Length: 255
Image: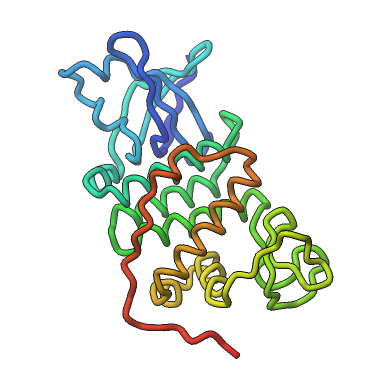
């Protein structure tokens, strides 16, 4: 039996038999793994609570025939405790976990960038320092960058003509110039483009100062872009609460 140890975030759990669970984790070195945690549903289990969604854990497993087996689990960060009692943060967290699970399709393949993005996003949600909706959209944009789907924000997605450009088309890949603009393109506000750029590059002063309407428009654009490229709907996304806590400061778009 090959023993291995790694740190990872619990993405989801499934019941197995009367007392066991199948745990899906995204780990630092081994990417996505699925392993059986035996007896964790029993009330006397000493470490079952550690293997719950959102938790960041240090696990030891051994390789099985079809599924690996968890033999030890230690808590690194109990992120779940900071999310389960806050609906907006919990639902945003569920959408982040589902997205990470979908983006890393192959088990056992390293996915360090997605792992680091996932840990950072869940830590930000649990820490309650940022608005949950902004954290979610920032994760979506950065995860799409890793996957090669990031929307063009300044230059034209088709001809690379420097912008800014007023039109946006999801199928075309983002912002498009007047020459390349396909039928059905939309025209987001300048503030929406500013927020997209701020979330992608971590400019939180700009992001925190945006108004509720801009945040809603940006969230809808990001979600539509992500799901179009994933070619499937996120089941958890319709449950996400999009009420924003808006700072009093305002951002004046450049001329």
